[in-house]
Length: 203
Image 1 (cartoon, rainbow, N blue to C red):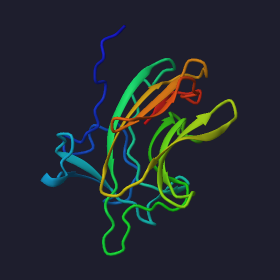
Image 2 (spheres, rainbow, N blue to C red):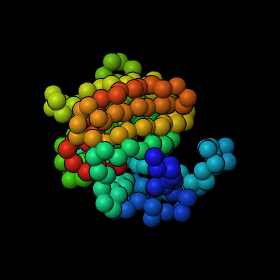
Image 3 (cartoon, rainbow, N blue to C red):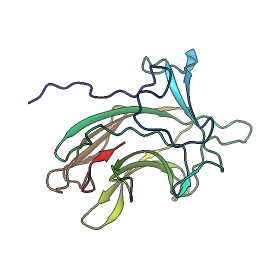
Image 4 (tube, rainbow, N blue to C red):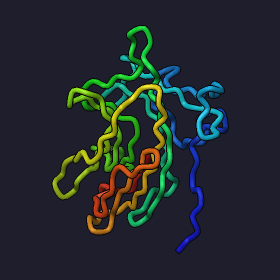
């Protein structure tokens, strides 16, 4: 068994986007690294990424600001990782909502095939299709050729969400798996999953 180690860090500690391998897909000012105000500093991090999307920020098939990391040699089937990140949705002020929760396509984090085509094997988003907003985890099911919603977490503004995702990337349903924690509680566990979409994966 190999010794665990940090293989990549994208915490903006450099003060810029240099930790991320690819050019961002964003309009001017859409992705800005900012120093944390003291009252918002979280888990010892000094900087954060401010993401802004406007109606003019159109890439591919929709409005988006996207920051991409793709390992130099891809992520081969059979590899296992723990991924940790934190997300804060700003509080609404004067009736203005900073993060849209309407509809069913507000993606916040995803692990995608290296060619970027099609639905991601693993994706997180925000939706209000049930009448109130939730953070959701969707997994691509190769056996049925469709996305399956497997976890829902209540959405709240002004609160840090600390995610830990354990994933074994595999084209084989019997070998891949996904586990998710939000804070301390484990909110999802699946011991069998199509977690790579038959291709190398980027995040």
